[in-house]
Length: 167
Image 1: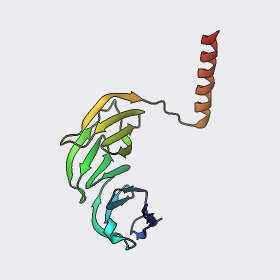
Image 2: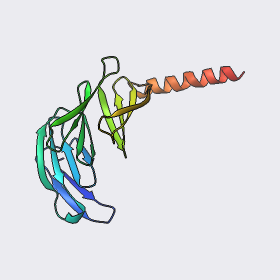
Image 3: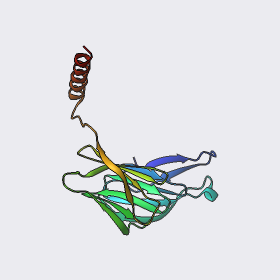
Image 4: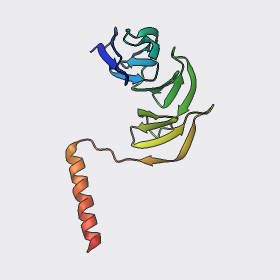
């Protein structure tokens, strides 16, 4: 779809109509980014705008499969890296991933922390409230499953191992 409705905690609501089919959204206190894997559109929706329609401020091309937004920085996962861009899509910094680490597929922001998950099940946490993003701790790995049957078989295997270890 190319239309969405945004609602603030204070009850203000706005309808956002874009010229692209929306694949994903990223929302910060005064901006909204809508993207479709080929293009991102940035809209301003500050608290002062209340129920007014968000104002289109920028567009840029991007092949990102995940985007996150913090204040005026857009985080785009593109190929083997996460790009830190301004609101016009100009790349300011990059966080690179090796071939063994995989391709970033999911981004999540919580305050001044960015979590990046790759297609190999790797998760890295970065502190992003400084000049250069800083990785915190060692990366973790998650098991990835192609389908539900694989996941059920793995759960059964772990249950058997646990039961066997208790005897």
